Length: 142
Image 1 (cartoon, rainbow, N blue to C red):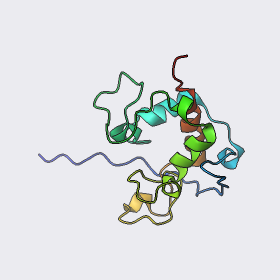
Image 2 (cartoon, helix red, strand yellow):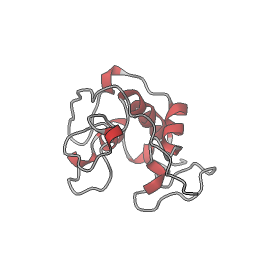
Image 3 (tube, one colour):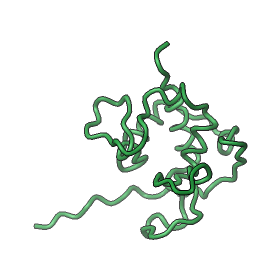
């Protein structure tokens, strides 16, 4: 019996919302939305939604086999502002065109995209803001 890989979750129906980058960040929340850190933690931990832990490790001890390709997310809220975190999630290619990190709220320049994801961002604006809210809480102990 052959088992198929799990299907990705349905892509967000919301299109990419406009934003304004300033320097190395996006100062204003996408669409003026407030993020929820609890929802953001679930997005970051979920390998089918945020996929963050495929490449990054973080202070989410219940999730095994965390990534080591990207920087550790522990303390990211001490190293980066919410605006900087937001740009890195929305479109990290603006900071490093050679990055392997996907642009989670952009559809420009993508290739080899599955049918379920064509024309849609990986994360909608609310999910981006939730992830930003959670990651901003990850502070180094003082």
